[in-house]
Amino acid sequence: MTHGNPTKLREPLAEIAACCSLPQALETMGERWSFMILRASFNGLHHFEEFLEELGIARNILSNRLTRLVESGILKRAPCVDDRRKIEYRLTDKGLDLLPTMIALRQWGEKWESGVPSNPVLVDERDRRPIQAISIRAHDGRVLTHHDLCWIDIADLNAGDGDDSDHDGVVKRIASI
Amino acid sequence: MTHGNPTKLREPLAEIAACCSLPQALETMGERWSFMILRASFNGLHHFEEFLEELGIARNILSNRLTRLVESGILKRAPCVDDRRKIEYRLTDKGLDLLPTMIALRQWGEKWESGVPSNPVLVDERDRRPIQAISIRAHDGRVLTHHDLCWIDIADLNAGDGDDSDHDGVVKRIASI
DNA sequence: CAATTTAGGTTGCGAATCACTACTTATAGA
DNA sequence: TCTATAAGTAGTGATTCGCAACCTAAATTG
Image (cartoon, each protein chain N blue to C red):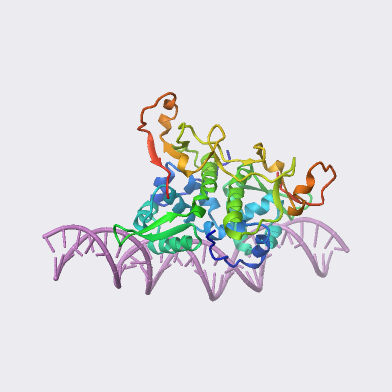
């Protein structure tokens, strides 16, 4: 597992990070351009100048972002064999594993922001039919909403079988509206 | 559909945005603190001072972010009925719909970043078993990886039934590694 | 071989954003 | 009335960002 350096977080965030990995995830991917660079990587762009032209990002910022993405193990940097001037940036497994997140965000934008039907449609190559909307699922595959979710302590995870009594392990109910 | 103002994007991004809604989505949610405020909202925080204490964010920045999240229709702002000093920030449907994205990012962080098993576990309330990992699925429910995906033109979507010939509609193959 | 182009940066500067603190305004409660 | 609370606003210094120019090594061209 290629870990980036476990970046130091500010005090109140560090407390949250002790039980939730969102702050850590945002440390690298929450940065401006990170997701757009990731998207470009998924679309087959591998070189500095390619990112530069595709995204219209400033050179020094791109340089900095690429360095950080490499440092955090999302991209790997390798010199090109056929042209020693070139450097290849490629997604690592850690980077590839961000695809569901990126598609979820894209689908959300498609539904709520742009309004555009997003003309080239993302499809399953096998049958060329559009993929499903990314959703939250229970262990048995049921689609869940925020109403169906809560957090329990890890210690109480397997204690629940055939146990009807109220659990002390319920930490927080995820619910708004 | 409560649209935020369709923010103007820089030139190269506008071109991408014409066929992909990721840039638009990032315009609001790519900002620092946006996801952490969203997380706090999902956890039942509704008031300015609550966000302030939970996140340790600067007052003016929080004020600004909340305003932007309201402007883009992710939160709605309402005066409290029982205490007219207070203002309630609550997730709209548009905001609630970001839950899959947020959980996907959290799961990624849990797997690759923090290493912590994320002690309070997110479970299905019904059977108190952990939710699945967020994944990309074909129309029939098969889990897909980046190898299985490609983009086709929207016009060629329904033309594929029983048609074995190569499609001109294949725009780009999503593939790295 | 010299001159030019290409790839991937680095440096310097002004503008925008951020964190921190102090101040403000409106309401609630004693 | 006096104090505390909620939700901001304003001012100041530190970072980060966008833009353009410059730099270095390797490839290409003549």
